Length: 462
Image (cartoon, rainbow, N blue to C red):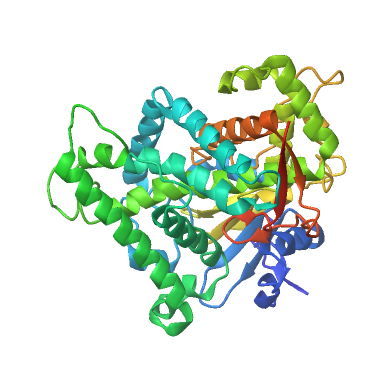
């Protein structure tokens, strides 16, 4: 039995389950549950959770596009839970409203453009060499990769935000990334603390509070250090750029001392965690598909050789590698959901979605739509290649990182990391799962991101 409603303007409220607890789906991931429900209820359905407004789930390209492109003014910002409201949303990259959102987003985009045109390629290439050296030190023995790949990606955002990189054995970056990873896993949709913020101060969420406070203190100390050495003529990183925007101590100012740490946290975590997750999936999948790893290696030999390091511009000359990366992101959509607040009554696919509702954008389902993808549960990079494999085909319905004015800002950086880290490793090593342990299932662990299970691999010098 599903819920229903009639209206003069359409088919009424989207159908959906009466029992909201089926959405929690413990221990299955929310992405899998909502995708299965879409096959029963259709591409648009709804449900209600206790203490929350009506939630509508959009599950294919057409309805997501109808919402975010054709009716973008109705969905201007991400869902802001009572917990995030209690923390404050002004100045937040993901949750600011109206003109504030435009200003903060422009600040981040301008910063990314500034660094991408300057130091970014050089720093990613340098970090790739550090990563290869760390793999080489294992002498072909089994190595648990999650730690190294997370720290390599974290170092890129550390350089962009704090102006420094850390050694992979440095407890500073290790602890920071561990706490950020925990926040991503803990603050997933459906966690009761999102709707009942008073739980945040109970023993049930002690670890969540500890992680939040650790990250806050870490960034505030970096801001204090930066302020003492700031040279406005030569900004080193995002913290410097933020400090240069502060005009006073008015708490109503968008850029101020009190909320500086939150903005920097958003900038750091917006790219470091998704980039690390995508890189881990790429390495896991080249280990599983050895014949595909050899195709990538052949392209490396043809385009790059062994005498020089890969450059990001090489990607355009390596169609199979490019298609492999695109299939990684489709196959294991790193960010399975987007969310939006509904700011006006709107009709999507004929269904009425009232103002005040919230919308889940189910990219996981869209990337597995059997009407768009042949054998969507299989890993097939060739689906992004033309018939003779010489050119990459862009598919408009491929939206693993979203569409519209709030699509992924760090997509170029994520692609650069995947390509440069991945090709540097494959250029130097043959990668395979460790024979001493079972192969990982590669199903994924779903929180705010879908992360790969931990695994060990052997990196054999070529």
